[in-house]
Length: 140
Image 1: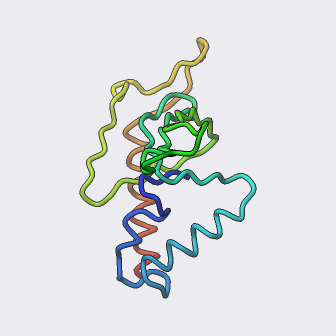
Image 2: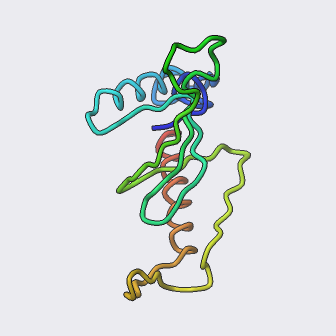
């Protein structure tokens, strides 16, 4: 889990609206703590995900000591992570624009000579439908 800020939770840390019976900040803190207790979750604060590549591979830059005037001896300023994942959620804010750049005109993905049915458009529509459903569940 990566967040560009020093505190995990993104924009929810500044929100005051009710989310699941708590403020956005409280809900984020509770959720971050729950995720931190999981053995397969690593938290990367001060980290920018800078690329999403094929097969669940992501690039990220963690700012380890850029914010410290005099870093500890032997500590790097930044770490470049190559993240391999089976599943990922890339979250965008309300004002962000998501660009699907790829082979949207093709109805398959070809890996090692094997064509598998796949539609960028269908995947995007399914993700948007799920997001809308989740928003409605939170509002209820």
